[in-house]
Amino acid sequence: MHIYFTGIMEERRLQPKDDLISLLLAAEIDGQKLTSDEVVGFCILLLAAGNETTTNLITNAVRILSEQPELQQELREHPERITSAIEETLRYYPPIVAIGRVAKETVELNGQMIQAGEQVISWVGAANRDSAQFENPEDFISDRKPNRHMGFGFGIHFCLGAPLARLEARVVLHTLLQHMGNIQLVPGTALQPIQSAFVFGVKHYPIQFNLINK
Ligand code: HEM
Image (cartoon, rainbow, N blue to C red; front, side, top):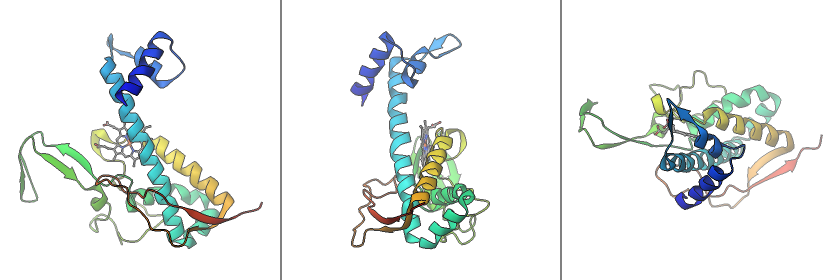
């Protein structure tokens, strides 16, 4: 990816276009520009952070729709509930279930000592099912309120692309539900999890459906 993005960056340096990489090259804060490594690093982060995550959110949402068929009709009749159903998908089947951190200082947390410099994995997927935070955490409640899930992280590193991801999921679900009825997983499909401790999703989720004629 480093080689791939370095090539594009060099092209844009010679011939800027109306795109993000050209904007990053031109960006200046207090007279300081981004280094080449920073531009390439940001591109790699954006490609990884903004692509597979949204793909999995959409797939996980379709999975919920097929696991809970009554939800399809509910959202078709009440499209205004799609927004909260997406939030509930981010809680119930979050595309990212774990976030890594390094402790800046030694702290005690719930009787556990964490030394400065140690790596910590916070299981946001588990936090999303915490009964102290969520009533009936094992139930998918499409209009759950409040829904303080951690699907987009927390604090200063809260997902930069959250509004875009939410918009993409909203457009996709709205469109799918307009055109597809009775969405089901193709019978006999064996689901294969994505091989990652940090990502929750499946490699393929083949569906069958009836076309809705308008
Ligand atoms: C459903 C889709 C998405 C999910 C579930 C998701 C999840 C997350 C999470 C959990 C974090 C926090 C990481 C941490 O604290 O270490 C994060 C950060 C980030 N996300 Fe997303 N993301 C999604 C979509 C996107 C999109 C579409 C973009 C960009 C186009 C994006 C760009 C970023 C960036 C740049 C960060 C780093 C922010 C920082 O460190 O300050 N994400 N995302």
